[in-house]
Length: 229
Image (tube, rainbow, N blue to C red; front, side, top):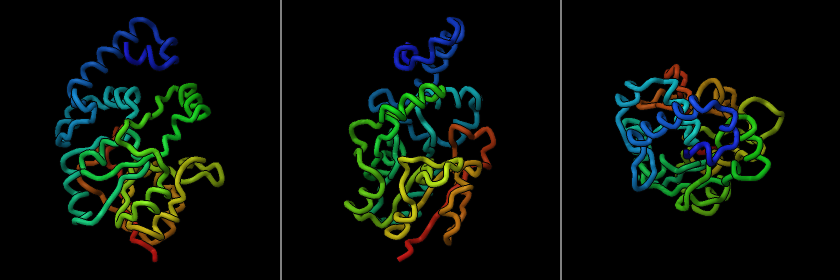
């Protein structure tokens, strides 16, 4: 059983629940994951609208997915990028960057021992970026690759005052918008509190937004900052 072998917290589940979750994971893996690449398939939003939201959240939890790329969202982002050089930062498993055909970067902070243990104790599954997601942080990626656009999904602000939605290993987003146009995809509940919103930005209800918390889809949102300098 995949999750039972990988994540110790599963020992607290009853045998019946383990079996039920294992069946759910197998079913959703078949539907949503490419069997060769293990990437999330690029599907239309309509596929997700037919799924049970709670079951989808459970699958996202055990597969360490936050944003679920859709055909509509990827098409919108490609139109927004408009041929400019772009990268994905904080890419996690790199599904979005893969479907956009752009380089993906993640500092793999959820694999730091202290962070990984904290996630497991909290009942969360940490992301573990695959080989084609370059393991450097967002600021270094922007500095080294000099893209015109940076795209990030579910990026949390760098820890400053222990506010909800901050991460001690998160990027200094202010540095990002000084160098590139920044497209950040998230949820109003978490990312709507970001200090970066104090800077001029555009709020967009992009098409095809689906995430692990999309029990209420209108909560998912995109914020765009133009390069400051």
